[in-house]
Amino acid sequence: MFAPRRRFVCRTDRRRFRADLLHATGRESDGGTRRKSTKRDPSPGARLVSENRALQVRRLPSCGAVPPESLRRAGERSLVHNGTQSSPGATAMPSTARAARWTAERTIEVTDKAVRDPAPDEVRVAVGSAGICGSDLHFYRGEFPATPGITPGHEFGGTVEAVGADVRHVREGDLVGIEPLLRCGLCPFCLSGDYHVCNDRGLVGQGVDGGMSESATLPGNTVFPAPSGLDAEGVALAEPLACSVHGFEKVKLRGHETVFIVGAGSIGLTGILAARACGAQAIVLARHPHQQEAARRLGAVEVIGDDDAGKERMAELARIHAVDVAVETVGGTADTLITAQRVVRPKGRVVLLGIFTGTRTSIDPLHLALNEVEVVGAVTYAASDGHADYAVALDVVADHADAARSLVTHRFALDDAGQAFDTAVDKSTRSIKVHIQPGTHG
Ligand SMILES: [Zn+2]
Ligand SMILES: [Zn+2]
Image (cartoon, rainbow, N blue to C red):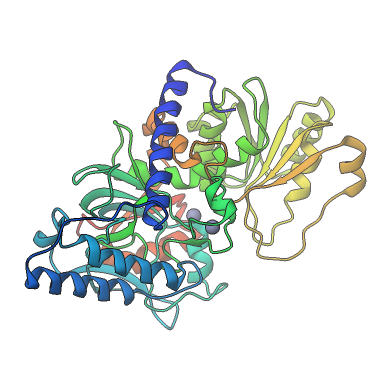
C-alpha cells in the first residue's frame, strides 16, 4: 500500500484533494452541473473570434478515443465562455509550433503545426521534455499502424502557457505532468475513477496529438501540477512509474514484502522506485549490463542476470519462498509470464504489466492452482480509490529525482526526433530512456 511514511501520507492527501478537484472539473465540463454564464458579450468582433474558436475545436481529428459528441459540446461551450473570459497568454502565442508527426511511411518528420487555443476545459502546455516509450517503438517498427499526421508522445511534462476559462487547478507558468488518458467522463467506470477501462479510452499521442511538440493542448483533467524539486524531464518519468504504482495498488503490496521484477526496461526500472515507496524491497531480473547497473543505482537489493547463475538463483528464491509479488514487465513476444509465476511463493501474487503483442504466452496451470498464485492484469493507471496513481508517481519521482533522472540516457532536440527514435530502437546504444526536448536546439 502506498502510505508507509508520514510525509507520503500528507502528500497523498493533498493529491487526493487535487484528484477530486480534477474530477469535479471533468464532470462539470461534461455539461452535467455547470452553471450558465449570465454575462453577455457586447462585442460582435469578440463573438466572431469565439465562433472561430468553436470551429477550431470541431476540426480536431475525430477518433475512437474522443467521441465526436464531446467535441461538439466543447465547441458550444466555447461560444458561451470565450466572450466572457479570455484565455491568459493565448494572444501572445505564435500561431504555429514545431511538432513531430508520423508520416504515411511510418517515419517521423518535424513540421510546423497550428497552435490551438484551449477550449474552456483545456490547458495548453509548452512541452519541456517528452520520453520515447516502448509502445512508440512498436509504431516506429511498423508492428502497430500509426496514424499519419498525429504527433506522438504520452510521457511528458512542461509549463502551462494558457488555460481555458473553466480550469481552476493549474495556472499559467505552473510546471505540470500529463496523465495521458482520454476518456468519456460519463460512464460508470469513469465516474468511479476507473477511467483507464472506459470503453472510449484513448491515449494522448496516439488518437490525438501528443507531447513531441513545442506546444500541446490537452483536456484539463489530464494535467497535474508537479511537486517542487522536479523539472520537466523528471516529471515525464512519472508516466511509466505510474504503471507500477497502479499494479502494486492492485495486489496491495505491503511494506515488509519482496517484489521480483522481471525485466529492466523503463517500466521495470521505475518499478523499483514504486516498490521502495511502499517500503518493499525489489529484486530485478535484468538481461543487459547497463540495465543491471541502472537497477542497482535505483536501489534494487539484488540484481540477477539472464544466465545459468540467474536461473539457479531464481530456483533458490522460489524454494525459500522469498518473493511475495512478481511483476512481468517485458511483454512483446517474450515467454516471461511463466518466469514470474514460478518465482513467487505459494499464495503470492503476479502482476502483469508488460504489453504482449502475441496472443499466447506460457503458464503453468497446475503450479498456479497448487500454490494458489494470483495473476492480476494491470494497465496504465487510474484513481480507483479516490487518489490518482499518476499523482502518487509524481511524488515518488520527486522523492528520488536524481536516481530517476539517471534513467534518461539520451536527449535530443525536437528537430532531431527521427534520430531520437533510431537511438531508442537500437539497443546497441545502451539507451534506457530517450527524451526529446523541444526547448533545446541541436
Ligand atoms: Zn508509455
Ligand atoms: Zn468512460
